[in-house]
Length: 344
Image (cartoon, rainbow, N blue to C red; front, side):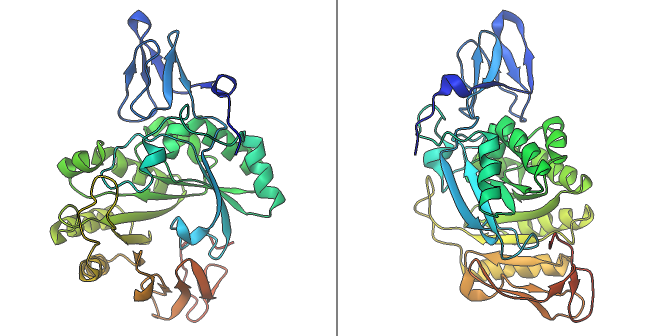
């Protein structure tokens, strides 16, 4: 791993507003931090230098791996394929349960990183016949300029791009990115405004707006909801979430209920009980959600894709491995019903 030189890699932020006395407001995410000279934003990646906001997270990923696409998780997007995954340091949330807190709560200036500009990322994917690139592990919004430039180049090379995101981004930058984005998995942390603030430091409404925008822009979308005991495990909350999803046309959107394991500032909570996950799945299916998965419990068998029309098994998964796939040209091989997703 090579150490980067931050002075060579910083770029002006694309979304900023100059204020009086040399201050500048960041317009990238709903926090809209106001920064004075040399101050850095909540995300650790935006700094005011002489009245101009710069990103410190450009071309310097601290994490770089090749993953199965199912790990994102994306189940209706290029199943069985590999994806080049990368992240820079920083995040605009402070999640109590963060599993990657060593990098999300740090700064690009404090961690060792690869020297990997956008063209090198795309070249790496192309040379290794990897069909897609994921911006993941930390929050892609905070390294937005790096994501956007990489996605543009990938688009030119017919390499697809994915964000795994908390969805906490303003509408204008999201719309600009959607032109070059193929898929997203959004973490819908819970469905309560007060609890959202307590768990993440952010708020619920902007995330719901992001879900609507991605759907409207034709970006393939899947949603993950981590069920945290004593926090986001109430049947009332899950019911409210599923009702909102149905009312807003997300019935075909894959919904992943994910099992919590003790992490970061919640080390004393137990793992999510299996019966709680199964109850959430039943609530979602009863509400009308067609593709409901249970993650982090591979032995349950609820990571398989079943045709909602004929109930035949379409994709059998064990962990992150696809064992069988009976989807042909986006249709069920048995009853020929359309199965939404990106299968090519």
